Image (tube, rainbow, N blue to C red):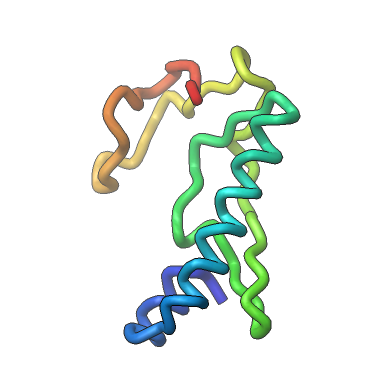
Length: 93
């Protein structure tokens, strides 16, 4: 199940489980950056959570080596994108 779905179903998640989830997401991002990768699409719908609270990252369409990864030229304008994101622009960390 996606992290977004999980959060909707678990609105009163215990603080210790929130910490576990956040720590795992941080480790995923650190691992990407250690390997000089950037991913412009990390969001709750692209993170899966298992029954034992393991986080899995999916959807690597926008991943690439730092300095080469670009956002698609046509971005969904209905989504709220972070400041600085535009079609065809390089990802940055």
